Length: 127
Image (cartoon, rainbow, N blue to C red):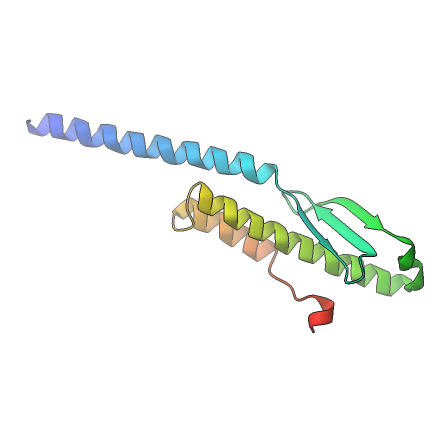
């Protein structure tokens, strides 16, 4: 095998690796787009589901919320929403690991993005 053949083989291998990584990235994007994160308040009166971008998709309130003042209800909803977003971040981490790998540039970028936007939060009753 001469130098030109070796270079061509190397280039073919490199292109194959790039194409495979691109396919894994597309798969990760598809999987993340389908994810939702859900959390509920300590008594189950408030339940929030967020979509793949962290936006509220569903807010469920039962009759027990009538016992809360307006400011307390707002605080509880925001707290549950943040826990749902943190749950989403954990699900994204699982998908990163399963597709592109957490140790790749793509994986690290996606994980960092979600961890920055949706950090782990303590439950109110854990404080």
